[in-house]
Length: 333
Image (cartoon, rainbow, N blue to C red; front, side, top):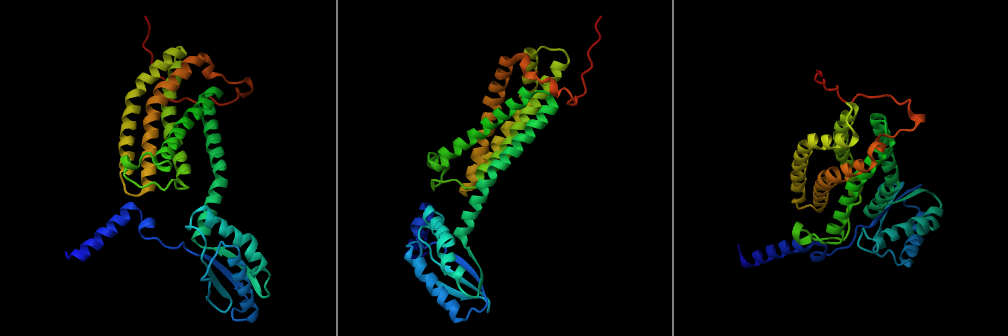
């Protein structure tokens, strides 16, 4: 390889290593304003575009070149370069200014203009984040509410249902804390081999919640089923807890080891979002199978004793479900 080509290749590799945004700076993608108008070539529309250009630049949140693309005689797209880096708060504020102030005062009042929509990558990302943020409480409420009802019917205990939700949320919280410290604060840059952007992908918290809550619930129901079976056979709650933990420890530990290893492989990938998912899941499953299920679950059940199975009289109508076929007791002489 020639020396000049070798130096160029090295520069490219180094640029990608430290982050393409710093090595190869460029402008953000412009906002795309779609306009439906009676006649794109009319003088009234040209006047409206000039008014829009003047008002947009006056906000200091948009700049030239503002270009009009005529897609047909009745549809045009106006490209507006935005201030900021494209996905930061400055660019999002610029999109909001166009939508709330500039467009309604100029294109929105122009003669012959039927409709105007502000789009583009920045607007799309902002709309996605807004929608996701507004729907997260609904997802949490649905998952937690449905889990509570299923556990209440299965184990006929309000205490068991509430405690399961709290313990499962501890595992989810551990995953959130880890990815914030490692990826948002940048504590894990050297260990995990990535360059922190001091942020987390918007969809990852919801994804982690759904996956981890399902995995944690599997562990929880598996252990509690053995405990409940022992109680139904006449064991005291304290003895049933020890029996349930003892009989399920091997299966829970083996499953946790497999999942931690698999998730850790995702943490070794180059894509940062995959690192966030893999390491977050691995840490959460490890803590869930050790601290939460092996320590907090039996300890809380031991402290509560017979209160674990408390059910108000008004809920006695709930059906009694048989978790497993009862074991055949040996005949007593």
